[in-house]
Image (cartoon, rainbow, N blue to C red):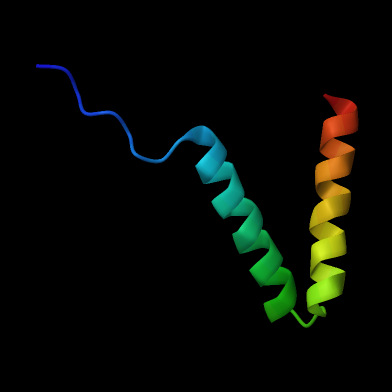
Length: 50
């Protein structure tokens, strides 16, 4: 019998991690806009290195 397929895709897991990062920035005292911009900058830097 085959193992069941994981309901969480790699893309969904990555999105959840980014959301957790965003919330961590907000909880650390950054505004929601600042937290979003930090996450966006990290994503942009990661994509340009790929």
